[in-house]
Length: 259
Figure 1 (cartoon, rainbow, N blue to C red):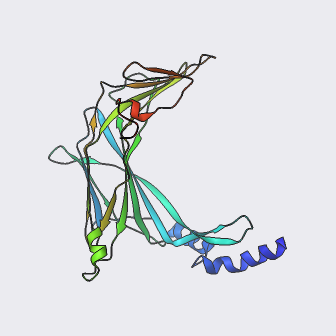
Figure 2: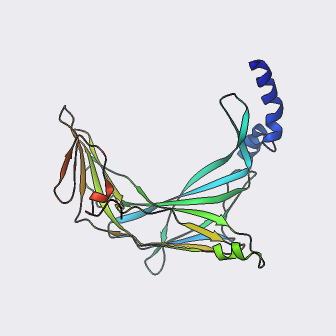
Figure 3: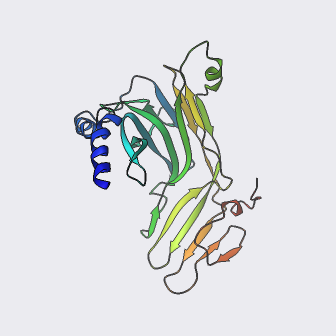
């Protein structure tokens, strides 16, 4: 029976995956993801807090070069889109803001399309002089990109168009100390937020204004000792929780868990 399943999957897989996964993979090597400026884009502008810099990760998705997902019986149960990620740089403009432009169209054989943008904030390396401190980027904002067909008679889709996200939340530093090894520093938003969506019609650009604030007066520490001493979390209000190596984020700003 298993041999029959294997032969069946081998025969139908190329047809279920469009051009065939093997063919797509080979051609994608010669015509890879290649986003170019000059067309529909997401334009990002930022004034980060002092001694910090934003980090951007752009995720492109291909529905053309999909892969087959199998169930526990090794039978096809649907398609899985292929994903590529690119780290994106921001550069200062004449107004001392940081800016960048991320094309929607990733081109290539697989017809890559921008799917989401993840942004975070980290300390500038000049801020930290201690060699035992590692600077990490907290993913504080994830924006999903949706293309809406721009038909005037489609009122429902027209009402969904929203091409701008403004992010001004306050972030707080977290120091995670591995005693005898190093300390990791990153930022979190204790209040938690949903993941906004940018909905665009054809030829319309999207905009993200990423202007987080930073409250360095409230530092949370996660202490992981080298010996048998229990791990602990030290919150900004002085409260200490033993046998913990993770944070209840709502306690950082001393707010209600249910807000």
